[in-house]
Each structure stands twice: as structure tokens, then as C-alpha cells.
Length: 380
Image (cartoon, rainbow, N blue to C red; front, side, top):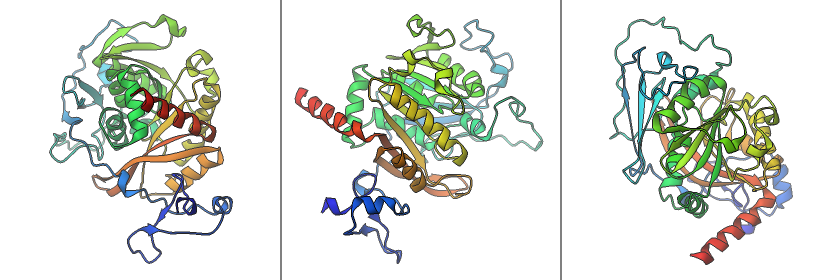
């Protein structure tokens, strides 16, 4: 039965053309033939649907920005751009209840909070001609502008590592995280929310994005939630680290349109166990450059890393890449992709959309991952 069904999970669950409830569609064509066909609608397994877990608590508030703000001042004048701080403070409390983190944002979250969680009430501003302070800064593209606020995929990713979402692969990664046995890279990190949370839970993670985000969002938020340290073993003076909770988080610039070898050393890129990408595989023009960066990481690492990424369906498919096309591009690279979890989210002024969490990697890594899971079960 399972061999007659195929998708990026090993089977495809399709919507009936009539619009009737989804059902399994069997076919006699070979896998090779089906892979040559145009991508069909991806519909996830209903058993992997997970609601927002209230054990991970989030909130946001509108805060007053003071130019003289000096909280967490470490004397590094080059990094203190508090006059350009955003007006939103986003709060995250990890499931243990003891770890409370806060992040400065330039805009409200979108589709992240539960109805019962505090959200920022914007003050009434009649001036419609306010100029974004970063508008004229080099590198401030649309993808950089959207990075200054929390998005739904970040919450799902943090939940996947800190809450039980019913996924066996995620239980494996959680086990390693609890044992401080994960070295991670986050690409397109935005305000650094995911990286900060995972560091607090025990990860050693390098948090990366465009220069404007590293300077004005990621590094200030890492400092805000931890103690600045210098990791001399990194061997790269431009990498800066903050000790957060049980782990360590570093900040570095990673531009997907430049070769990774020009930005990070082999010593750094060869050590990652997991690559994280939240809410950043959506603009069509940046997908191939990001996939190329990830391919380089797969090739350079001696640890056979996996990619964990989130994808949110959107309405405007001209600018945004569709999920089916994205999965097809990954398959073309020889990657296997599995949907670990998904949920339906409501985005203000944009309706309901499906949000997915995937695990991906070269197909030759599949057997290695299964073997590791079996060894873990034996140890337990």
C-alpha cells in the first residue's frame, strides 16, 4: 500500500478534483515516472498537525524608544545603535518557566500569538510620512525589512525543539539539545529569536543574516539576553558570542548572494549538526541563492548536517515561491524532504494559511539518520 503512494514523505495525499475531502490517491505509475510529472498539490498527513503549544509562552508590547537608552551597554560603541531600536518588545518564556527572553523588534509579530497572549496595541499616529530609519542603508532590501519582526515559523521551530510535538526525528534532536550536543547554524535569522531560544536551551549556535540585521537586531538581542564572551577557538575576530542560558550564540554576516567560503571559514562551516531556516524560503529571487549556500554547507561538513526549515503558504505566488515548486527544486538537488509538523495559522488582514516544518538533506544521509535513531533507542 505504501509503495503505491509517493510524495516528499514517501506518500502523497491529494485533494479530489471535485473539491471533496482529501483522500489517498493510488497510482500504478512508477516512482521515476511520477517524479518527472509537474508538481502536484502537497497535502500533509493530518496526524502531523500540531496546535500552538501554550507551554511556550509569547507576548509583545509597545515600548517607548529613548535615544539615550543604555540597557545592556557593554562599552562596544560600534554595536550600540539603540537610537534605531524598534518600538516593539517581544517576550518568550521557554516551557521550563525559568527562562524568560526578550527581543527588540521594529514591527509587530504576524500570526504568532494566541488570542489569549498579550499583543502590542499600536498608538495612534497620524503622521503617514514617517521615513524608515533604515530605508537608505545599504543592503536594506524587502527581505531585510521583514526580518525585523517575529513570524509564525519561528514559534513552530522553537516549539519543535522545546516541546513534544509528537515527531520522532524531533525527539532525537531534543535529546541532543538537552545534552548540549548540538552545534547549529541559523540562516536568515531576522531578530535572532530562534537562535537565542535554542542557545538558552543548550545549543551552540551561529546566528546569521544580512549586515543591517546583524548590526541592528541579532547582536543587540543576543547581548540583551546573555553575557558577551569571546570565543577564541573560533579563530575569526568578526564572530561575536553571547553566553545565553545553557548554551552559546554567536552573530555573523552571511549574504546568500556571495560564496560562503568568502564569509565563513571551513573550520566554522564543517562543524554544524543542524542548519535552521525559519520564514526565509518565500521570496522567489532568494530561494536558489539560499539553496546553493545550504548545498555548500552539506558538502563541506564532516557531520552530515540536516536542514530544518519552515514554510508558510501565501497568496501572492508571483513574488513568492509555491511550496510544490520549492520541494521540486530540493528534490532536483538530490535532497529528501519530510514534513515533520504543520498547523493552520491566522494572519492579520491576510486570512488563514498552512505553516509547515520540514527536515531535509541529501538522500544518502537518510540511512545514517535512521541508524542514529536506532542507536538512541537502544541506549534508552
